[in-house]
Length: 321
Image (cartoon, rainbow, N blue to C red; front, side, top):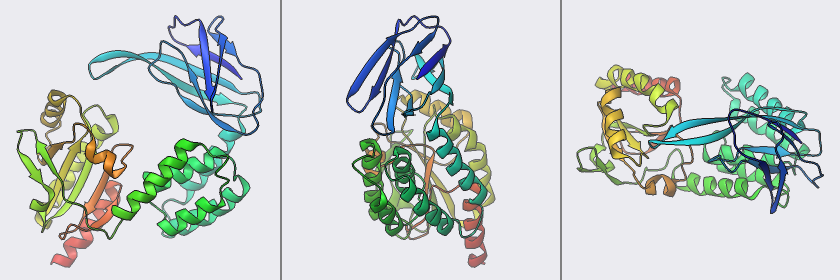
């Protein structure tokens, strides 16, 4: 495996981690090379001591070339150095990822997409039972992207050779299955209490009788901030439909959170899950993430895009007339 680093670095060594193995090689002219073999494709991390993160990739018995960039960013008001893998060449795993992505993008708008996806993954998993990318797909579908139901997910899980799968993906999958038991479509959303920007405690039960979109976000989350104008339009469009938005932030800096609310002109209920206790309990790994609840507090949608939310609200509005 060869690597090339772009950006200002002072590091003398590059480090490679996989399973319980750690290796290091000297960086010469911003280039490094690791040699060896692995029994199976594994999830690996490449690391520089000056960086605050260690990007993951699939390590396999091929001549892989990584192009890595290093840059400084601001996080929570502090300057940190981060690493990114810009490109990978010579990787069979990358071809598998492209194959899955092409299928997903080509079929996601079809009405029977969940059936198509389940059928495709049944074939894919049987062919790649040991590959950690199969486990990664399953973890995402269980925890982040709830397209398949619990029965379908558990059937796909039974196909995998779990002795060869990466433990992080297996743990995420199990966490997702637990979440499906509690926070699935058709289940009541459990009541909670959090404080708003004025320090007042708010309970979800106060909004029974309203259609509620619970939106998990943070001031530092660029995709979250990008969609806020669309959420503002959504709230205005369906104001007559008894529609409410509750934004729940994972910000650790309260001032930055309050500033973002004001700057983005978020005129809905804003609450702070400062220690992420609620999100951790629910198994929410990535943001933005949302739940749509009906007037009785029953979950009618999970992690929907705005187009789907609009369609559901339009259907509800028609029924109200």
